[in-house]
Image (cartoon, rainbow, N blue to C red; front, side):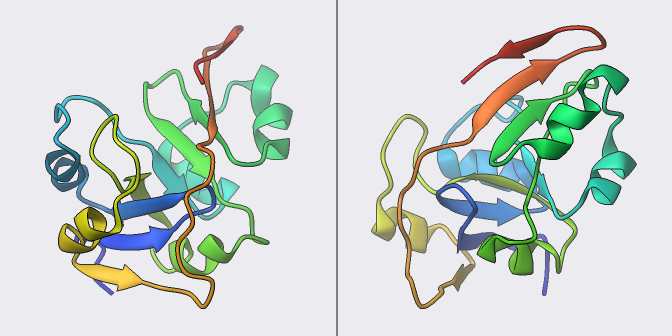
Length: 147
């Protein structure tokens, strides 16, 4: 499996595009390439290789479900639960950029998503648009809810 391809997949939160190429995802969504895209990771070990979680928030990060954190290094990550179906997909890559499969500010459109993906990963349940993840920005001592 090639991580630079764009995968259309049911993520832990909603239907999304996943790839190791964040610029490609930005172009598809027609959003500025300097706007950062979150990364989904398969474990806290992988998270630790990419960022440092401030000591004060380690327990909160570890116990959070379907929550994205923006870390002091300005990168954002969401750890996928081993119980989630999306885990089997993300575990093959360890880490991928992930974004909803729609144009920026628009709702999910299967035709748009299908045309702009290289590979469609379809499960027996199909695709369903669900709520997005909560987002928190953390630094050494403070936490702020973004969404």
